[in-house]
Every structure is written in structure tokens, then in C-alpha cells.
Length: 96
Image (cartoon, rainbow, N blue to C red):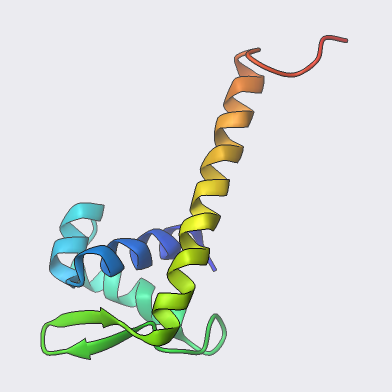
């Protein structure tokens, strides 16, 4: 599972539309669709995260459950990046 796939999933969950999410994420619609398919494949999660309804996507029960964890994971990754940036800028850490 890749960070970009989590970002893709969360934006699609928010917009419920591939075209709008592709625009928001600055990727092509086919790239976004491919990333979502990879996440849903059996090697990754093995469940459909969205119910396809015409041109719209609605979170499935599995997608609703996963969204909480995906958001938490991205939040923690960003917090880790900020902590590393603080260390690099000598904003935190210990002097030895």
C-alpha cells in the first residue's frame, strides 16, 4: 500500500467523482482509477471500497470503515514528516 493510494482514496471518498478528484490531485483520471484498482485488489485490501453508481462513486461499507484508518495513517505520516523537519531545522531534539 502506498501513500499516494491513500490520498487517492480519501479524495475520491470526499468528492465521490473520479474526474473531480483527478483534477484536485493533478493526475489523469486513468492514473487515479488505476491507483484505486490497485488498492482494491486482493494483494492489498481485497474489497471494493466504492459502489459504482453511474458516473459517481459511493463509499461501500468497507470504504466507510477504511476511511477512518486511512485518514489517521496520513495524519500520522504528516506528523512524522513535521517531526523530522523540526529535527533538521534544530527546532527539537537533544543537544549532545
